[in-house]
Length: 102
Image (cartoon, rainbow, N blue to C red; front, side):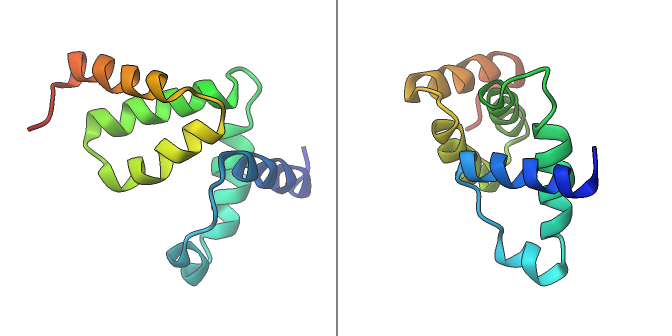
């Protein structure tokens, strides 16, 4: 796959997730990397659906206590088609293994 095809796939996934480029990413030139590799190459792999990847990302960020990322990922997961109740269930299930924060 060409770099331009990767970038296009990344743009499509970012749009589907409702994820805009952050001010920081634009300032440091990180936006192209995020579009091409994070969204195009990783989120764009065909094995898992975008909604399934959103579940994985939610569970991981929940387990690691990454609340800033969750502020972006929760709306993105909903935009990817997850039901609000599914998002809650991910947090409950992740809490069983990672511990419930306090």
